[in-house]
Amino acid sequence: MDSPSRLKEFATHVIDWELGPEDAVTLYLEWGNNNWHAKHAPVRSKEDFATYFVVDAWPSSPVVRLVRRNSEEAVDLLPLALPPEHRERVCFVFFDNEEKGMFGSAAFAKKHKGVKKNTVVLNFDCVGDGNSIQFFSQKKLKKDEAALKLMEAAFLPAGDKDVQVVRGFGFYPSDNASFKRGAGVCALKHKRVVGYYMDRIHTSKDTVLDEANLPLRRGGALRYLAKLN
Image (tube, rainbow, N blue to C red; front, top):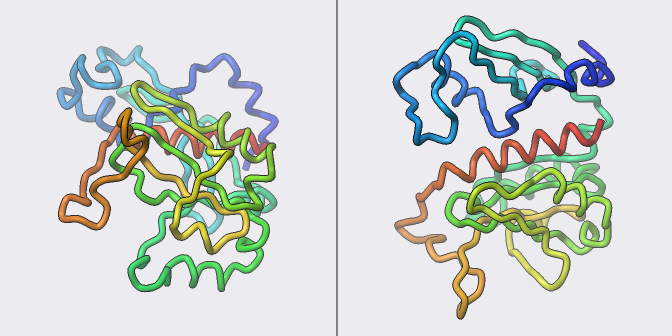
């Protein structure tokens, strides 16, 4: 496994932070499934390349891979093991079973007591429907200005999507409550008179997914990990 210091060798590469492996397959292996109105321009020849990061969770220890792909091959430029000390610094979670008394997060917190007390836990909760991605931190995390700035530097606005790390008054009742340094992440809508709101939660329409929210979260998580090195 390579050293993070080798990243400097690829400083001239243009990294597409918003490109995921599923999009890369569509672009380079499924020609015709992507048009000029899509987020990524169609591939026209083998001279078109994309460079992007992939988090490989298949090994027992996760690996971050820098990949360069064209229509003929995908080259693993740089595999980086996620250092153990970094695994104690941040945790990205998608919990379920909230309706059963926060069983999902409570069970996780009980098993990982160190994470419960010390780790930044970013709980991606209702993040599929809304243009404002907001981070609501627990009291202990809200006092850590460096941690808040890291979130802001990693999770960036894109298109009509804005990102807000709430510093003032704000309360988001979700699974992040199980963690001292947790933050609930949600997607909200906004109206001038109403302010920020969430309108479909726990209804029959609570199945909406704005796919534009996916690369924003993915790119943010990758940038967060990169900034830990």
